[in-house]
Length: 224
Image (cartoon, rainbow, N blue to C red; front, side, top):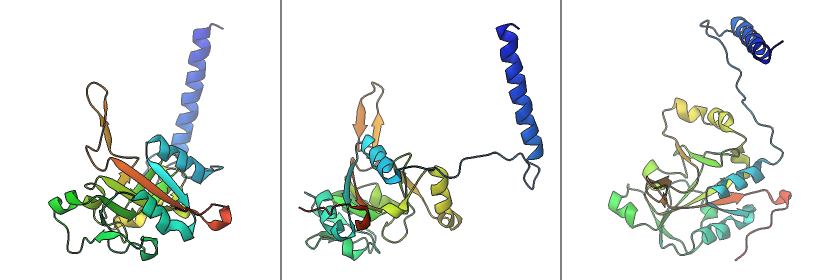
């Protein structure tokens, strides 16, 4: 058998098998079902998340629950006025933080004058190194995470899922309620026509993630 005929034979067999699968698996409207991967079995979900986040030039500060405030202080080092949205965990706030409240809502100029914003997240994704905000308690409205130049975000290890389909499932209630979602993969960056990387065009140019892991995992608390 010639190579061409062998290759075409394999293609026909594959297409025939796919056709049979499509003809037997249908949804309630008669449409073909597709088999998507909904979960990822990762040996080190947290470690992969850290690696992918750092690939985006973001900083990860790992700590246990007792060291969150100190880790947040490290992430905010050098920042003056910090926007903290309503509902953010007060136990995570450094004692000497100059908090700028968004109640009532700050103007665009007031947000622009802030040095940083401090938020929590709804979910984080290991494979893509992405954090997602659904702008519920502790996350504030979208503008807060888009205007200040520094974004410090607290992520707990149990909020990290394997891949995007798992994140979509976790965000189901937010989607159904019509809430906006902000997906962040590293600091704001783009590339101009000469392929020069430019940061800070569409949002914060600096992203620090405080990753809170269980003390049982042997994570040493951040200390100044």
